[in-house]
Every structure is written in structure tokens, then in C-alpha cells.
Image (cartoon, rainbow, N blue to C red):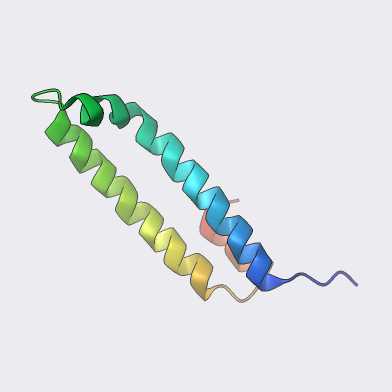
Amino acid sequence: MIKINITKAKTIGHDMRRAARAEEFKPYDDAIAKQIPGQAEGAEAARQAIREKYAAIQTSIDAAATPDEIKAALGI
């Protein structure tokens, strides 16, 4: 029988979550960094929606009791 360390599995899940969030942020990074008028506000609003999405995923990972629950939180 394979035993999985749930704490380490959660750490891996959080790493995967952070990487996915960073990928979703990429299209908006340039507008934010350059503070392009008319684009920065929309980019920040989009980034906030991404933050909220991944905050919910973080909460789900933290509450997970099994590896399958972590996978479900990540959508894999």
C-alpha cells in the first residue's frame, strides 16, 4: 500500500497553484509594470479576479484531507 504524506501533497498542490496563477497573470504584467493609461485599470481588475479564483483554490487545498481532494481543488 502506498502512503502519501498529505502535508507534502498540499505543499506540492500549492506550488502548482502558484505556477498556474503566475501563468494567468502574465498577459497583464506588462500593462501593470508600465502603468499604461486605460489598460492598467482593466489589467488590475483582471488580476484581482485571478487572485480571488486562486484564493478559493488555496482554501480548498488547505481543507483537503486526501490527495484526491487536492487534485479536485486544482481541477486535475
